Amino acid sequence: MASLKIPASVPSPAEDCEQLTKAFAGWGTNEALVIKVLAHRNAEQRKSICEIYAATFGKDLLKDLEKEVSGDFERALLLWTLCPAERDALLVNEATKMLTASNWIIMEIACTRSSHDLFMVRQAYHSRYKRSIEEDVAYHTTGDFRKLLVPLVSSFRYEGDEVNMTLAKSEAKILHEKISDQAYNNEELIRILSTRSKSQLNATLNHYNNQFGNSINKDLKTDPTNEYLTFLRRIIKCLTCPEKYFEKVLRYAIKGLGTDERALTRVVATRAEVDMERIKEEYHRRNSVPLDRAIAGDTSGDYEKVLLALIGHGDA
Amino acid sequence: MASLKIPASVPSPAEDCEQLTKAFAGWGTNEALVIKVLAHRNAEQRKSICEIYAATFGKDLLKDLEKEVSGDFERALLLWTLCPAERDALLVNEATKMLTASNWIIMEIACTRSSHDLFMVRQAYHSRYKRSIEEDVAYHTTGDFRKLLVPLVSSFRYEGDEVNMTLAKSEAKILHEKISDQAYNNEELIRILSTRSKSQLNATLNHYNNQFGNSINKDLKTDPTNEYLTFLRRIIKCLTCPEKYFEKVLRYAIKGLGTDERALTRVVATRAEVDMERIKEEYHRRNSVPLDRAIAGDTSGDYEKVLLALIGHGDA
Image (cartoon, rainbow over all chains, first blue to last red; front, side, top):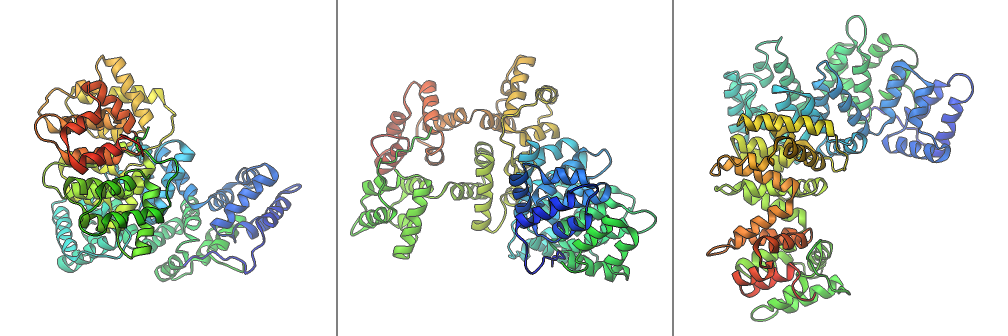
């Protein structure tokens, strides 16, 4: 359910590199050509382009992109061109350094990637930053947020469909007890959310809903101003219905005056190759306007063009 | 520094399988032949033997071994024949099921394997048990032990040699403060032990020793009957000098009346291909008797023979 469009016959990485140098040549940059090439190649193809570019010209494509373009368009192109694991490693690293609460970007990456992909991010983080993700996350967070985030980024959840219904019932009961007692930072609650497979968790939360009459997220909404409760609800959304979570991030990034370009760019760059079609469907349903029209209304120029290309607008 | 001895010219896996069926044929088992084959092959070679055995005879070598041999010899052969990641997955799984405190077997595996090898164990655990290690460990432990064990088994430590001396100083100070306050289950202390690279941790603990006049393990020995303190000291030993840790496990397994065969077997089977030569050296230095003589004095029969073969006795 990726939105990325790849041409039926893909040029060789060498041909793509030639097009890119053509786009960079002389005064100014041919942005349309850059988009035509990079925004229509999958992760593996972009990786080959970067490798061939380095081997042919002895230069780093990402650094050349930085010189040629700027602003939101630059960030979108750079994030997109990076391979997924390196991109996520970069996003987590940025998030650990921000002073403002960017815990939820770390959480989003930990909870919406597959176990294997999350492990690839941890490997990429080693090579790029010479430290481990959990090390930086643990160092830069405190209190209840740390208690949740460290196990989430360290998790390697089982991904099979097997569900233990007895366990689902007993753990739904534990969750309900802890939430009723407002023990939101309880160890057992954190254990269940951070270690169980997504299938198992889903069974547990379904049972919660059936048995106690409310969805868990409704029960976690007693105080809408409590940041930690918001965080818990987002974790549950990421783990059980990521496309709804991403729809909401997009909705808030676009709505009102001004746009949250960083959020918009992040979601488009990280989901175009994964589940953007599902996210677009959710977006349209929830906002009564298609995502491409919403993006076109809120952005402009090459930034608009690259986002629309990535969400599947036009031909490859 | 492995102790395993492999013949200069290794027979093909098919030839080895033939020898094994010969050893299993008729009444009784030719144990010497089984040892001659299996106790002198590395992990990759044993894996090929298992694969060829299954492909040729349509049977599981491990199951056939179970039928042919028994007791301590059986356990030693089975543990040894498994590939390292599967063996560790099995040991962790057994440990989560035991009622008695076997937390330290889980800790030993989490702290003495390389980051990559520990990840392989987590993968093997998925395939074998359809759950994640952290899930089972978190479910089967409680309190302070859980707080330590879950991050330890989930860790993917950076393995480079880079050391940040400023950080080493500041974290040595944190450790010393927490230990002076007897806050042994403090979050910061757990964060440092469970996330820092082994090189970084070593620098921190060296600084601790230089700055505060005692090794951290001495400061953690205020109450020798406190199980949690013992556990912390073992973690530090596993992370900074695993060969000394394993020497001690062997010493306690062998000394006095009776032998702790499970511990003896575990250490020999898991370290023969890794650092058994260093462990033997430590053992000899600390006990004034070579490990092979100590094992020969405490065990007998085929069990003795397989252990001695694995620690490098005799010719391959």
